[in-house]
View 1 (spheres, rainbow, N blue to C red):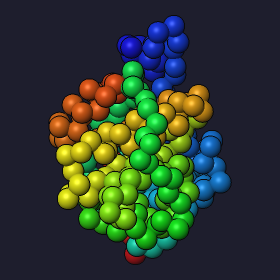
View 2: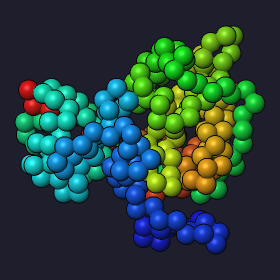
View 3: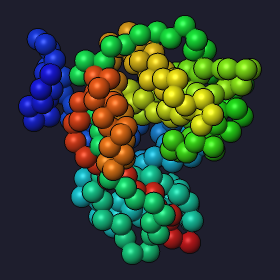
View 4: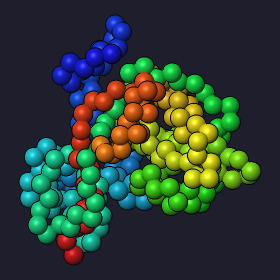
Length: 239
């Protein structure tokens, strides 16, 4: 596989990856339109689903004002991209992440994995609280398919689908209970989620903190390829 501008070439196929520069905006205008809230130049997910929001490239004051209307005074949003944050907005978290795209993943269904749904949300939230894989809320499970592994009757690992730009699906919420690490559970779940994405004719992708070199090496060994670096910023609107 090789990248050529906004395209990557896998075998005889070339796929446009340009939508991945703004995965939230592309998803909200496409497969995730049912979750979209819009005002002027800004868009965001239903806040019970995920805090991700979308702003146009080079967002100026009007776009930020529109986002403030969407999230409300003191509301939280997670934005992706190099958007200068106005002085009256508060940054609570910011990090550089690496975006990786499926290049040659050896996908495989996982016999031990079980589908997770609304009834499993309390356990999922508990696991997320203990492992901190990223934002996961009460309705995040509605964004796509989630798989989990149970041992001793308890949910010990999970992974699932988050942002869904046209033609792509993000693998997210990859986490394992610390007491059950070292068994390859996360790797097995990623391969299983990726298998489901591939069956739909879509391409899996994911994000990792740019300083998490261990995770990046693992993903590359699995068959993901680094596409680009992006800035993730969590902000709080003015009161």
